[in-house]
Length: 95
Image 1 (cartoon, one colour):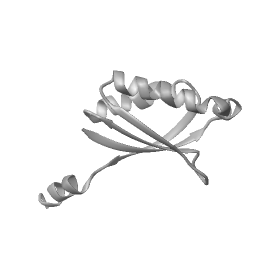
Image 2: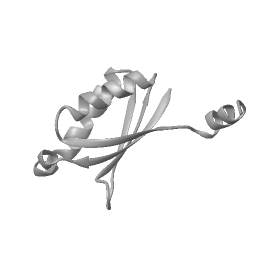
Image 3: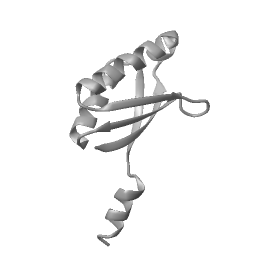
Image 4: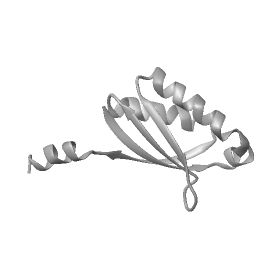
């Protein structure tokens, strides 16, 4: 499974309905599961409102999930592919 880290900020729409953030997160977790993936969300202080960690079978599914969630208009995301130590060791072995 490919892992991704997303830095999330509420849009104006998302901030106006901030009280619903946990419900929205639970709905997004269900969508991720339906797409064969998983989603963990952490609410943060500072520059970003939330950090999400997702896992999907491939990059394409991750992009489809993020597009679906973003299309609802509550968050904007910056997403990075993340690699664990085993994956990085394999990658570095190709140098």
